[in-house]
Amino acid sequence: MVKSHLKSRVKSKETFILTINGGSSSIKFALFETSSLTRVLEGKIDRIGLKDATLTFSGKDKKDNVSQNISAGTYKAAVDVLISFLEKKLGKNAMNNMVAVGHRIVHGGLKYNKPEEVDKEMLAELHNIKSFSPEHLPGEILLMETFSKKFPGLKQIACFDTAFHREMPKVAHILPIPRKYYDKGIRRYGFHGISYSFLMDELSRISGKEYLGKIIIAHLGNGCSLAAVNKGKSVDTSMGFTPTAGIPMSTRSGDIDPGLVWYLARTERIDAEQFNKMINSQSGLFGVSEISSDMRDLLEKEEKDKDERAKEAIDLFCYQIRKFIGSYSAAMNGLDTLIFSAGIGENAPKIRKRICQHFGFLGIELDEKKNNANSEIISSKESKVIVRVIKTDEELMIAKIISSFIK
Ligand code: ADP
Image (cartoon, rainbow, N blue to C red):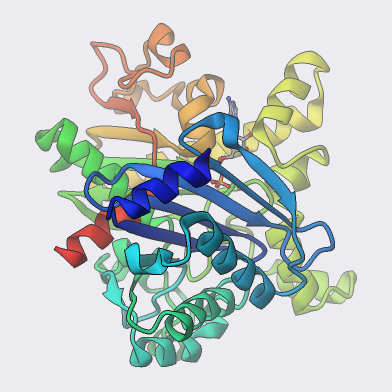
């Protein structure tokens, strides 16, 4: 069904934009019609490098959802699977109907503060800064290189997750370590920029006045971060040189005492590699609860089993977010709009409630019913701060960026 549906669209000369989000062990992709930016297909290759790698995709008709095992022992093999899947799905001349590919690129380093067309110079620069994000950049570079080799005429646009924050004031991006490292590009970059751009576009559509105010956005998914945005510009954000900084996440620690590196090296013989693994894959909600990295599981454990570790993990999560909201309100000298987004932010009223309680001094007051219903506005009429829930869509943001490039 998806196949024939898409093939008939290809024949009808509809053109497509492909978005690609290359993670460390996954590749997410989506296909949009250029004219309407309607999503016609989306999918994911998961567990790259493992024996049980899978390809899942869904079309407009949910009956057509498919999940199949694939052989993707390496990232290169996964990229090849993706390309042959697209060719098969869209018909032989598929790529002729593809107007551009948009890539989510985790790190743009010092050089890139806006989306740009991929060329040799960019690829060389990204190779140069691979060590800024050794888990993500090599796969993302490989994706872009493979697409340009295979489809030389196809336009590729890189959308950097750091770009949204690149104009932050220096006081927000300089790190309090020796200055020589700043000169080497070691500073706070911040991430989730594509999501923040999408949410700010949405806010400007909903309320131009709010868009120009003092805003805090809480992107709470598996990866979690907050951004302080004043007059439409990012002025601070919780992630740093790496996405490990800031608030606790599903498995990432967020901010911790930097002195732990040496202490654990001495007492537990933990080396740099092990430390990195600990703060990225064994910490956060998962590390504290020892149960799960998934907020739904923890909420259930807390409620049904009165599990103390689940409660502590959730309490810590909400407490750290509250502290960031407080400090960003101080940094901006006020707060007009608070936005919750991503898996937890969009769907977990209990978490939003725990974060927003005792914020009377800031003028945040939730309307319980609206919060429980995940309404667009969840603050009460009396609340001085407007609290919103906005669904993020990074793929659509990339497609929107691409469509502005090809106009
Ligand atoms: P990613 O960052 O991988 O895109 P998501 O934005 O999908 O992740 O967020 C995943 C998180 O959202 C998980 O912790 C999941 O438990 C949480 N989540 C999703 N739905 C709910 C819900 N109804 N209640 C609580 N948490 C939820």
